Image 1 (cartoon, rainbow, N blue to C red):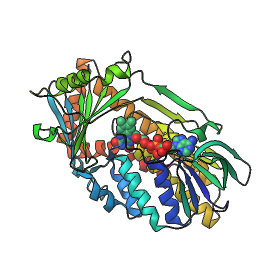
Image 2: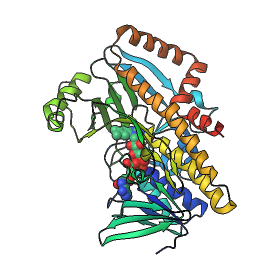
Image 3: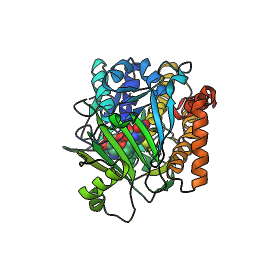
Length: 402
Ligand SMILES: Cc1cc2nc3c(=O)[nH]c(=O)nc-3n(C[C@H](O)[C@H](O)[C@H](O)COP(=O)(O)OP(=O)(O)OC[C@H]3O[C@@H](n4cnc5c(N)ncnc54)[C@H](O)[C@@H]3O)c2cc1C
């Protein structure tokens, strides 16, 4: 049992784990409280952007991440009817980052890799089947009530970081709103071993269509032999059973890429899609990060990356407070920096990505596709565009906020 001079983290998703590894690296004792018994492997984040790889390099983790993922140096913007629109080459970012590529690696593997890395550090505990139910604080301490298999118990710490996802329980005990909206349609993710590379697709593809856009990615998969995820919007009037119906799924895949035999399907998953940002990331000793602080649609592969950027920022400030008697106003700066970019950048960009893919106006679509063709034909324009899409611009904007 650790003493109260520690930081509590609620939620061992990828963001909670990244917060934990940073604290371990700084030498700050912590307790990571996770409700679930194991790391869930449902198909969510699979894309890691250059600034995230730069940050994990500080923790000597990027090499291991690279070893398990696919290094993807180009991606396609396509149209379902006209085919390839633009082939984005991330090499134009080679003066901006040592990692001018997207790393395709599933989020549960990132969590497992961090879990393993934490074994090299002392002064922490990771407690599974420990679900945070209530939170209280005074001027000195945060007290967290936790449900465990042996009944309720209490943990105390100097600060609490709520990394407990979009439905954050921690957030409910803070004086904040979770403002924004939920899309009427849910997103269906179908996973198939069918090899789309042999029919011309890149490892990452955004495919626009006024009726049924889709996004297509290759990730290593459980056996690391490669598996493809296809993301489709769904009709809000259909039930989950109707959406998951074999014939419906086959019809969607055949509609996207007709072929003579049927598609093998290994998984089907359905996600609600929201665009929301917490009205403040700090309530005195309680802080929010990751999906607990902001949620967005997955087009562009940004949510988890953004959460990582939150905790690298936050833990640096906590370390300054912990070891150098830094002013707690640093925690307000964390809120200003990260919340501002979540609103100005993460929300704006992901909403725009979705609008562009589903745009029903033929003239506007033609114009947008023409713009993308111009961008990829001009290295300066491509660099400006990709600095934003690869999340470099957002980091620089946050750093400029004082
Ligand atoms: C289809 C899809 C594709 C995506 N693709 C990408 C992508 O390519 N790139 C990207 O950056 N992002 C992507 N995202 C977003 C990404 O999945 C999320 O941003 C990411 O999971 C956020 O991580 P997190 O740790 O903040 O929250 P979560 O992953 O939700 O983890 C929260 C953790 O907290 C635990 N928890 C919850 N409540 C409690 C409690 N009361 N007490 C204790 N523990 C609790 C949960 O069990 C969970 O382990 C995608 C999302 C979807 C749906």
